[in-house]
Image (cartoon, rainbow, N blue to C red; front, side, top):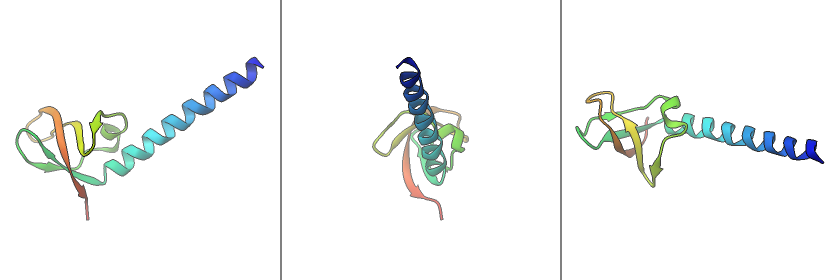
Length: 78
């Protein structure tokens, strides 16, 4: 019984990590506008994996001004 529980736990962790990587890759295909300077940028997929977000606002670090704060999702890059 103990092996079954450990197996389920490991499977759950793998699913969460794969989902986070998928979300990071998909999120990095979007443009974001900095809440401080207004510049648009595309974050790296690793920056998007476990970021905090609410609807279309994501906590990201702007590469232009260096501020870490909420950035607005402006849609997919072409």
